[in-house]
Length: 426
Length: 178
Image (cartoon, rainbow over all chains, first blue to last red; front, side, top):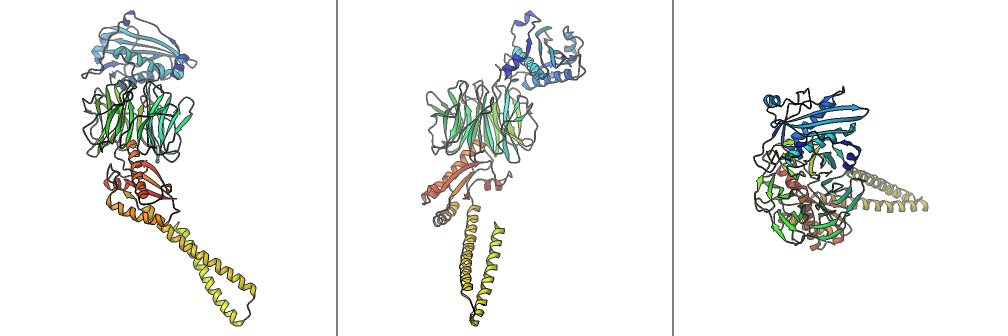
């Protein structure tokens, strides 16, 4: 889909400055003392009478703020010349360290967008791009430039071309929805008029697997998002918690047809390849490491739910969590080093993060209702989760750097079980 | 259900009254010695039908009541547990007796959980609760082919309030008789 966008985009790359090829890491995203870069984004210029220019600068501000790396400022200011900058003013007036300027022209349903990123302190142009495309591609063009900015400053493309799947509950029915990374454009994926939950993205983002009661009991449905075709895994018993293997068209799930809920490896078409766990008691909620070899899951082997790591190749199992009696919903970071999970203590569920080697247990959420179902952003910098902090369940984003939280979207009903997709254009 | 039952009862009462009146009338007629064979046959058939009707309705009433009682009585569990609590073992033993005397009745055992903990884990926990009850019934002699199980986890709470009373109510195995 996104590839298509790139083909339809008549894309012109203009290199304004030769010295910008020298790669500089402005933001060390792994540093615990990382501070947000103040970035000025004055209103864009336009010869159009519509407010497309103002909207565009706001889209860029919001997208950059979303990353947790930037603090956008100067949204109400304007700039006379988008190329020749009087750098001192921006530094003296608002302590901005970076500056984004833009100009947008509309022409018969097409748009031409010129965007530049300047380093105010060293007084130079870092990125300059001119894009042409259909008007309905405006948001994608702007996000593409945001992706260039974060890549130039952090070495990571960011999460701009990822989506979040989630469950929305309205009048006792639960359906799967998808929205963009920032909560934009939520739309239903299922309309079963039943209870459907725990969505999980295939590694290439082309399929979603989830659990649904649409046939009366918990079964797994594998949905192809391109042609909307569905495959159902409806073995006897409960068929739940699908989790795709990274780098393969295979998934794991907890199936109870043998009498005990165990983790199985299945093909992307729902055929059982092999059984992965042989433990007494409940085994559920697998989540895969990016290496495609190790997976973390919940086992009740010791009498209370705890996290274990299994190695698919060696068949070894190691217990990961020892603190608290009720550890669940593990989600392995796409960067591989950390695992987020939920822990129930004193009647409340909260989100914790632990290193994959069992060290560095850290609590992420405090107070304010239950905080559940953590899912990592594809760059490992943010986590989306469900919380009752404002009453009914809604979705929130937390930054791993400053632990700042913000609400992802506002829609009727209750939203739970978020799942962050991989980056969908690589 | 109750409405139908009351309707049935009224019908039976009406028929009984009619029957009684007819019987009296018949007696009168017999005294007069002017009854025809035709009338007698009709009366006999009517009486036979009515007796059957009455018997069926009485039977239906008690069975329906028993079914409702059976389904209204859930088997409750401790938090994060699928072990049968002694109090509910007694109730299950009573249920077994009834099931043994009604061998035609099949059932679905639904496993439910309170909404603490996670959806996925609770689906598994609910399944274990339903299976624990199923196993008890099988061990006590109920034919396994009569029992289906389904887990709803925390998805269909009987009481959605976030308090201990509601949670205790929702941690259960619930029977649906077919």
